[in-house]
Length: 272
Image (cartoon, rainbow, N blue to C red):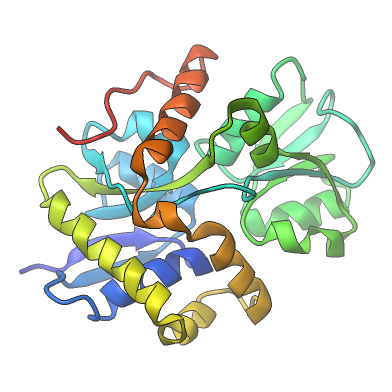
């Protein structure tokens, strides 16, 4: 059987989740050919159906569900883990601000647009994630939208949080925040892939030491303590199973975004 083309980010939560599958530790699982890529890259590549299984932003789903099925495991959805809007100048809103964001169809940017309705930035620029905090610190931007480990490291850049979009979302809706989704091409055995990925998650939780070297090798020299915090924040019970609570959160996010004219409408998210 031809190896499946699988794409996910080099971030610790993804390498933690996919380590067992991609290293032959899940019995009966198909072989994989792995591509590491930032989520903004995979969001675009998935439009062309370049991968069999791919990690994307939930915000990108309305453009992808014709060719892909949303799997109920392996992704990032939770509480206390949302994107941050950071500044260096103490501003209280984004009016007139030059804003750096990590991608056009990231969940972070979608949340920022929902939160910032009525505010009018001077400009919004798509910027590689690693360049956002230095850019705000150095005055190239007035505000930056950040994700992942930046929750733990932004004070070292002398920045302050204008908004915690996850907190805003949770307080506004009561839902956890949907961040990253796992999709599989519809013509594949998605039930079997769900078993494989869930087994990979279970193995990761049961044997956290097994994936440590793999995680460290792809974590951009991230401090080991930050790696552990990153995993603890983004890998949780929703990574095993979205369940009713997870699906409700995703549907509410995308329905609100559609009502605001930001995304196309979506159909049912569950297979069948």
